[in-house]
Length: 504
Image 1 (cartoon, one colour):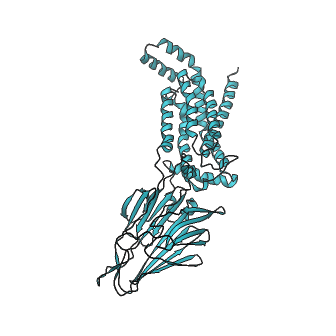
Image 2 (image 1 turned 90 degrees about the horizontal axis):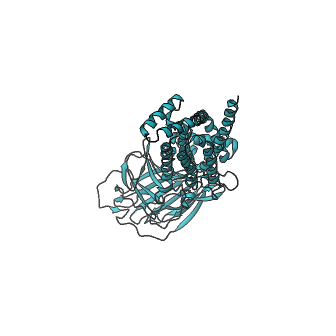
Image 3 (image 1 turned 120 degrees about the vertical axis):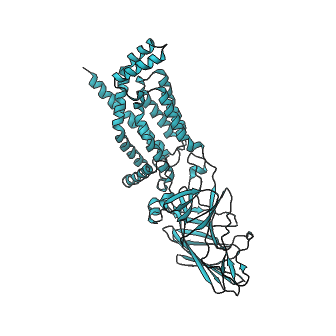
């Protein structure tokens, strides 16, 4: 293999692998808030009293009440009837999805200047509040262990004058990523993002205001999701604010309630882990919120394969090893072809050295003669053939990387001993060192057909890969280590067979 191809390959791999490691944004929380105007015709009449004043309501001390409904535990702030904290039951312990935050506006809060009364009946929370001007507000929060919940908001004008109602439902302070590596500054740093679905298209939106017919909108927290589906189709405005400590303020268009008028809106929402089966079961296309990266179809196939293997092995580490065996079986024909190519290169080494000595002062003539030598002995692609097995595995490598870091089912998945989470890096760096050693021996076995300059580069590769893999998910390192060990085994077998066939 020519040294320039090796250098190009190493640099390309370094750029692709290093991009996610070094080029990451600071961890931020994304706030979503959407206009949810009550459907009511504009009415003429007496001067209206504003239900929500133009200026933000003053910050009030939280007045919390805690409810535990099924696998959900909520801390409700009576001011605005907002969710101050949300926990779900995971493996027998409470996991905080929405952390406490000292902010004027909290999740699902409406009319923050009103203090709501709360009552529970089964899986339903009812929150009611009243204004001296006759505005009556009732919020109904119905919870489910399937993580799909509904929020209904009704307003009624019990007064004698028209009331302008400005209803908007916001969400804050984001949702936990569940990404311990990101919290520690590891390679899989996660940044929450706001995403929207318009038809079948899912896209990310940055801070600002957006108007469209959104099928749903969400805060994506890596392993967890807070997604919201409007009750009525039609155009709405979405406002996104993104910072370390934030609050979102909505200003939707004013609707007028005449005396005796009653209007309402319903919001369906999903708060929970990004389990593909659960997301698909919603029928809303929420599974598209799982970011599988550039090689998404392949990553989904790997994810499905790992889950299938896990049913038999009960361990994702062994499932990754089994997956590696299958991948190596697919690339075995290329590995055999690469080995034969290496043996041909080894056989023509004496002729190559003679040509290099003969035309050491004539580079152009040397290239012509070397090309003729390659043609006579069937050496194609200028030596690039030896890289094909590795190149073929690159999409698999990056697809597996995205599957490991993006799929909830692989979060906290142990293997053996000290490997407690295959989505995190090896805390003792044992696997990366073993992987580097395996690469070194694999390269050393194939160096007989290389010139000295190529050998120097091949010696550097294991060191570079070891450095890159120090903070990579241990499941990814396990895949590469297993691949190297299988490569060594195949090379030993092929070498013995070649030697036996060469004997008279």
